[in-house]
Image 1 (cartoon, rainbow, N blue to C red):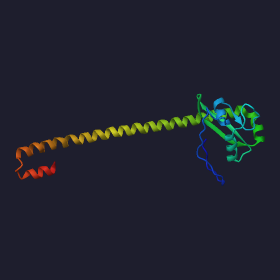
Image 2 (cartoon, one colour; image 1 turned 180 degrees about the horizontal axis):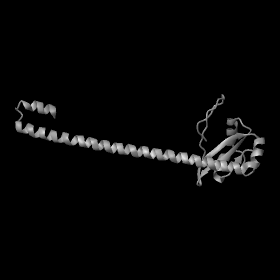
Image 3 (spheres, one colour; image 1 turned 180 degrees about the vertical axis):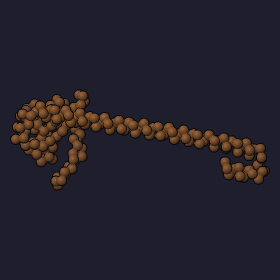
Image 4 (tube, rainbow, N blue to C red; image 1 turned 60 degrees about the vertical axis):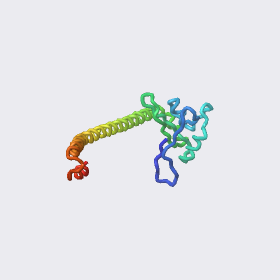
Length: 173
C-alpha cells in the first residue's frame, strides 16, 4: 500500500507491505484470489482481520474496498479505498466495471513500471559505456607518458648521474 498525504490533520503513511502468503487480511486475500473484497461482505471464510480493522481506522472509514492489481497474471498490488455501506451496496451492482477499472489500472501501472525499468537499464548501460570510454582515454594518455618516461630513463643512464641535466630529468620523471 502506498499512501498519499492529504490536507487533513490525520497522519498518513508512505508505504505498507503485507505478506500475501501469510496474511489473512482482505488485501492479501484479494490479491491471492484475484477478486474484489470488501469489509462489508458477510463471509465466515474471510473474517475482517486486525490489519483490515487498523486500516479502516487509519482511513477513518466505515468500510474498505480492496481491488487486486494484476498485469498478465503478475500481481502488482492492491488498491484500498474507503467507502460507506450504501456505496458498497451500489458497487455490488457494478462489480464488472470495478474489475475493468482494476485491470486498466494494473495495465497502466505495469507499463509505467516497465518504462521505469527500461530507463534504469539504459542509465546503467550509459554509465558502463562512459566508464569504458574513460578507461580507454586514460589508457591512451598513459601510453605516451610511459614512452616519455622510458626515454627519460634511458637518457638519464646515457648522460650519467654526474650530468647537470640529471636533476632536471629526475624532476620531469
